[in-house]
Image (cartoon, helix red, strand yellow):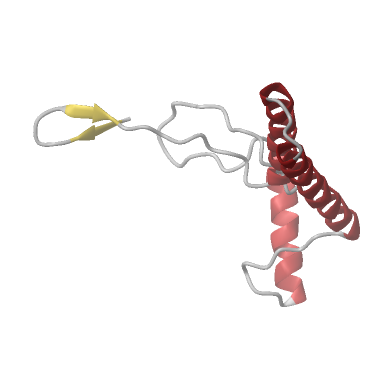
Length: 119
């Protein structure tokens, strides 16, 4: 896609898009028209079912509904991120070497990435 300015056409950078349901990265389709919101039909269906349930329940449109299992999973992943951050802080305070701090920081990043996936 190009952005036309006064002098020349400048390619527009498009950010990576992710499925609105599962969070997987959407492939670059290069198609014209409305961009995809879901990676597959099952994700589209689950999103529809969630919207319908929210409407039936009289909840606000921007409400987030989690099952008890999803909430427990989210809490577990939050705990993992906190523990990984504490490990980094403790290692730094104890004078750990660069390699050890790098390894702990990578574990923290991986735990944070896992937390980004809400479904």
